[in-house]
Every structure is written in structure tokens, then in C-alpha cells.
Image (cartoon, rainbow, N blue to C red):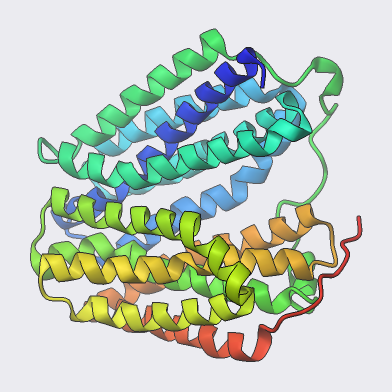
Length: 396
């Protein structure tokens, strides 16, 4: 990779770290804001889901717009908007202000990931592209892992302070983009207008459910929804049941992300090679269901961290294995197949937090029971649906 491309990649990686740090910073602190404003699990679930809804809607729009006006302007809008919404969240004193800031964050931050990926596609050779995408993925993972710990520690000073720090980091990323990042999409390669493709092609989603990958799309929805039932209320659970502070809650989220990254990075590959995707999927669902109940039974901080670690490890086996099997069963092109899979992941991120917040207000244990039940549905469904199949040759 040329030195100029390496410099550009580092700037893009830093940008993704900043944006994903912001997501990580928010999760352990939101419950404390909710408590101050007298809100509960239902409002928390809606707040988390609203962010996912906006990303699902606006991600394709930003990607299409970057094809028309170039990558750099869209990146600048995304990073600037992200910084403004972080500061706005820190200044929020009413519930509607939190929702406004979070919704706007979903709208604007959704510009960064697809545009950075498109930038790499524009500016790297095919042989270097995989490495570039991997670095961006690792950068996003770093932000998601260390964001909660940073947010929890900084919030010891004040609940709003982490948001101001995140906003300041976005200013630094914006300056780097303006001064050092060249445009990657030449004027001659830009689309003359935004494509007329629908944002949500519901008919294609429905058809996909009856295709060879339909059962796997249902499974990816179940695993994401089950995870988000648990993930969306975890901070509020730690606060209301145990009275933990922001630093303890931040560590909980960091353990969740760190163990998941280790599991996906080190275990999934060897396990799927040894036992096959179907076996790993079934074990992942079963152990996720059981470990969620052990989290509910944990009554001390150390046991809570250990049980959350076990759940995170079991859950980490699922998405990569399901995605791998989906690609092998694909009868459409890989790009279309992965796009469909990501759409069902997004649906899980929307419905999971809403259900988790709703049942949390009934009883603190119900989100764990509900998430475990969803994982059990996934397990029994996988027994019926997931079998080794010959790889189908994709068509364009």
C-alpha cells in the first residue's frame, strides 16, 4: 500500500474510532440520565431503538449521496454532525432533548461507516482492499470496546463531560479530514443523480424469506434481537438492581465488547473449520440462552462480570457463523445477500431494545427471560433449518 493511501487509511480509521467511541460512551451513561429525568425502561428502549431506526433509514441515503457529490463532503457532514449531537446530548435537560439528540446522531453518524468503506474501495487496489477493510473494522471494534470504559470513568466528573470530550475528538477528526484527506472519487466517476432505488424494498425482503437464505435471515434477526433485549437495558439493570455507578457500568460494557471481539477474532474460525457452521450456530444459541439466565442469577459484581463474559463469548459465535453459512447458501450476488442480512440485523437492533425496555418496567428479570426465550427459539429453529449444504454458485 502506498504511503499516501496508508495516511488516508489512518485518518479514516481514527474517524471510525471517534464515532464508535461515541456509541460506546453513551450506553453506560444513558441510564443515569434516565434516572435523573424520571424515565424508565420503556423510554430507554425507545431511545436506543430510535438511533438504530435512523441508521437503517439514512445509511443508504448517505451512501448514494456520496456517489454523487464525493466522499469527503459526506464524511465532513457526518463527523461534524456527530460532534454537534454529542454536545447536544451532554446539554440535554429534558427527555425530548435526549431523543432529539439521539435521533439526529443516528441520522448524521450513519454517514461515516458507508462512506469510509466506499473511500477505501475507491482508493485501494483489489489486493489491498481486504486489509484496508479489516483495519477499518478493527478501528470500529476498538471504539466499541473502550468507549464504555472511557464514558464510565469520565462520567465520574459529571454525566455530561464524556459527551463534551467525544465532541472535542470529533473536531480533531474533522480538522484532519479537511486538511489532510483528499477526495477519492474523481468528478468523472460520480453519479449524475441519486439512484431511484427504494430505501426499503420490502418485496425483496419478503421474497428473501422464501429463498434458500430465508431461515438464516430469521436466525440473524433472532440473535440480534435477543442480544439487544439484554444489551439495551443492561446499564439500567446494573443501576437499579445493584446501585452501580458509571465506572462499574462502563466496565460491564467493556467486558461485553472485549470478550465478543476475542471470541469472534480467535474462536469462530477454528471452531467452524473443525465442526462446521451449523454445529457452532446450534451451540451458540443454546449456550446464549443458558448464560442469559445465569446473568440474571448473579448477585455480586464479580459473578456478574463472569456470567456476562460467558454470554458474550457464546453470542460471539453466532453472527459470524450465520453470515458465513448465508454466503454459502446464496443464490443472489454476495453484495445483495450481505445487504439483506444487514437489514435483518438492523431490524433486530430496533425491536430488541423496545421489547427489553417494555418488559423491564414490569420486572427487572423479564428482559433476561425474554432474551433467553428468543435464543431458545433460535436454537430449536436451527435444529430444523440449519444443515450442511453444498455451496451454491452465486449469480450476478
